[in-house]
Length: 116
Image (tube, rainbow, N blue to C red):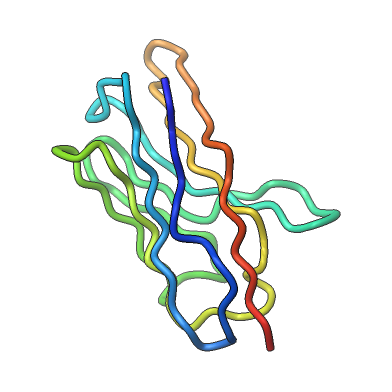
């Protein structure tokens, strides 16, 4: 099983980025997908999630700025990040969970740095 994130980088405050997470060797449509982030010295936190049925949930600080979506045909989940702020700086991780059978996978992370 592989989850490969891409799309991170260094941007200025107010810019946008789109993160992608491509999954392989899983039945993607069965999994709830999430984007987490971890800033230096802080705990990993859930940023956004999307269920296998397409329901979404967002952490309060990103509501209205970030959008999570999925393309089951491409086994890919996206995180569109607009109006980025320096406090969004973190390593962003993709997560796949199939709770019913107890499967949980993580990607390797992609760095997002927002300069002021």
